[in-house]
Image 1 (cartoon, chains in turn brown, purple):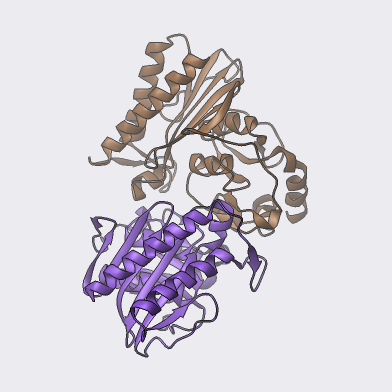
Image 2 (image 1 turned 30 degrees about the vertical axis):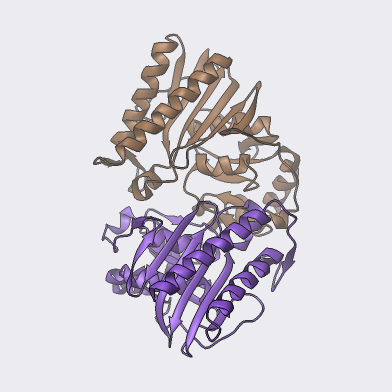
Length: 255
Length: 255
């Protein structure tokens, strides 16, 4: 497993370097489901690069990925879950604040995850049998602080609408932060900068953070308490395990 | 004037180094007007350091600053406007994503402004007779892009409440970002990462960005179109001058 993690660290850095180099070129933007659901040629080319590396090194492994409808059942064999650019809108508009994400599963068990914040050159990796690091820094498990001394990350629309009581919950804290990417936001949960994160996202958006989060005493589940299905888009939250009941209770009472 | 700008760059870096060193010590947090309106001993000590440096170098200059009720009429003589730590909540909770800000006025005319993102070591400076830089990089004036290819920064509560049509306006763009600090957010306007910024803030929160923004073809005014008063807390927006009428029209129609 250690070799596979070393390999994943290599290819995620290679993907990051490829994206960085692309910033000086013309980027082609396409709309997917709506004017604000965007994809670029760089998203696709980065995924192609990752897929080619994985298929060459581990020909019988499977891939579940954001672009090109690469679907695979998470419980079936060895599965690499890939998000070539998470925070595509930030990538297009800001040329900053986006991540590459890789997660690796065997028979549905998360073995390790990686989130690479390309422009900040911050690589979060670990989970499963491995400790979780940000670059060379070992990350500590969740440490409890009073709710009114914490910040929370959220999808902006869910916050504004008080979706399932999210705004009511956040209003009991020091406030909301909206960073525009699941990878970026959840890496800030892992490093203790925000307490929790709420959004409506796909498996490739949450897989890596789910595996690393588990190792650091966080839990990722749907906002209404169901398990993740690793296929559809779901409303999820990443929260400290220790506060799961408390947060569920507040969400229910604020809903 | 050039000597004064060189001096301002020196003391803002010194303030940043002082704050960075303080992160390893115990920080004392006090509530001001509410549980989420916080100040630390480091805010106060950093301001004391800046004030001492200015008073020693320019004994007859005046100071308008966030802490310790240092009030002065912006139109009266030479005035330094100081925010020792902008984004105090981020400073306390994240130990990151906060800025030191300095602006310098003579008889009410903005001569230069500085925003220093301490942990990222990014210094924005210039305005008045000076070009605007981020570290060694010359910043370009505002470049027009379609509204539905832009992001907007906002105070979260104003966005959620659709205060004066802000949410209606932002919903015509790629979305909102909430970074938790006026300095951090407005520096992202200056560098073109977000189109505009909306918040309810004090003179020390907007003075530096106002001066640098003017040089880059942005305008800072209240959301309802009044001039800034440089004394009270006002609901303000920093927007491209070129789009001021268009944004005002959208805010009015979405209000």
